[in-house]
Image 1 (cartoon, rainbow, N blue to C red):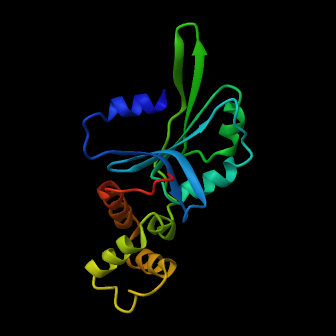
Image 2 (cartoon, rainbow, N blue to C red):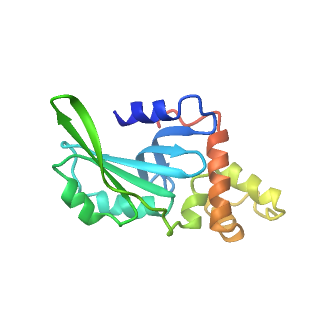
Image 3 (spheres, helix red, strand yellow):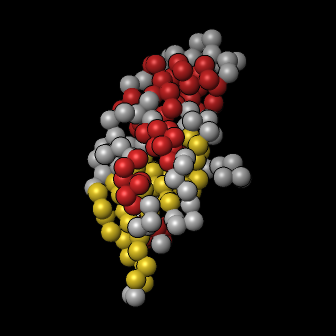
Length: 181
């Protein structure tokens, strides 16, 4: 339902990328769905067959990267999820009724003010991050360095708001993604 709604909302919008299972923090975490356009919005889905034991750690990781976050859950986990999540997260509750599946916004989301520049930089591939440093004249001595060092330099060199723009632009420009994602 969520994927169909998002695909319908952004149909024909060449400035929007919808990505399933987007890896974050050098692959340590994956968000269920990411919508990338003028901002990055993550969607975490917790159905009745899921568990909430990882949600606090997921919320922490997602808060380092996304401009906004949405949890999509059911009545089974609604109260517990709301209690676990920062107040800036939007909360959607999915219900199965006689007329089919419906969604209710339980809590409106707010912009995230806690993004981490290093976590944002980690969304870039090594060469993408290095190209960004080169374009700013800041890549001297870094061409053979490991990606962690390049990410660190980029995170320190570019203000977080600008870095968010860079990451969104680069992600949307990618023509190929890893096959396993």
